[in-house]
Image 1 (cartoon, one colour):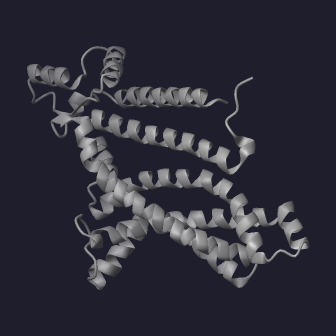
Image 2 (image 1 turned 180 degrees about the horizontal axis):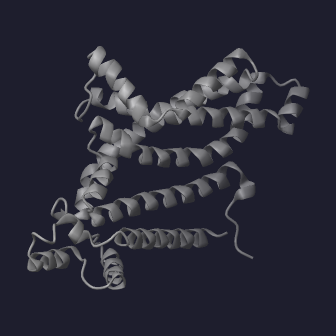
Image 3 (image 1 turned 90 degrees about the vertical axis):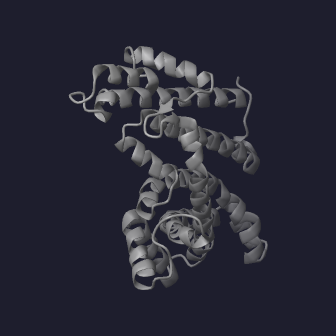
Length: 307
């Protein structure tokens, strides 16, 4: 599949996601009557709000206006903040990027060395120990881990603030909550990828030639183990964005995850649509970059011209 076709598929995927979210949100009922009590609010006021927030006409009419506005760089008006949805989301985005970025670094800092050690000691006590704790970390819900950290470091030890933003201390517990849970998954993938690479013919041939285990690991095992890790890493980072909705709420972190929870509760459809569209766009671009990375890591998967 050519690069142009992949980009076109990405745009079609984004359009489909935007359409499904738009229809699903409006299938839940009139957002105006959900926000305001129709028995205690004048009809003229309700109609004025519909005009201001773009809820007039049929759902199809609203959809055509919404798509037209997107193409002109307009993403709707936030009923919760009384300003455009784009600025509301962009205001919260840096906090989430900081949280997810630090969590991803922690995930890789734990998962890569621990997974490699477990693979190189496959079947041993150390391997079983790592796999046991990775299972516990994977099964433990984020909010449970977050509350446990608050009880330990904020309530009992009084070392870290339990909520808010502003200093490095505020970042530690949210990053630990997301990073540890995803590191548990990443560790298992690293272990599995290295074990699969150790079974390859090139590794067996290198051992037969008398190549040292250290050289085999760096020149044969690591390059072959990279392919599955390149696939799973963006997916786990995407899962971190989803997990941030819970973690940011627990720690009072003013990011996009907390914003989407607030927006759903307040029926702020424009902000919800903006956030979903942004996440979908990031995941689509990430998948495209993964495809390009594959073509560099393994020439057999290079983007080829269509026949």
